[in-house]
View 1 (cartoon, rainbow, N blue to C red):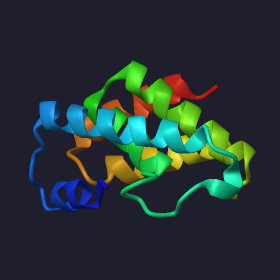
View 2: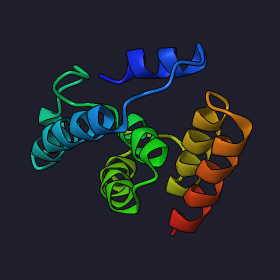
View 3: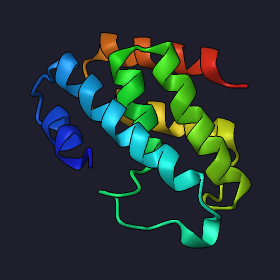
View 4: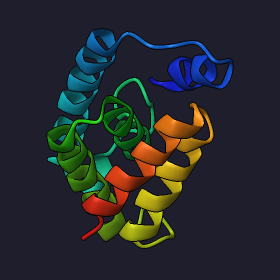
Length: 120
């Protein structure tokens, strides 16, 4: 759902924060609908079940602590259900690091600092 946005970032294109926020909100609504279901019913289609690490990256890009909290909650549910091989803190750090590599140095440092404050 956000692959195109990340591709644009890698090419140095800037993103409209209002558009990103709207897309995040729609994607999070979908994600929350999916994680309410028993795990055996979770769809793998990213248009229906957006990747939680991508949601976190978009929230970090927006610099929105509340949206980061929502994304981390979805990640925590997936970690608890063994959808990821890494612990939650490592996923948060690696998502922030990957995003930091796509943006300017200054913005990347801000993202990493924000991510560190979110680690439980």
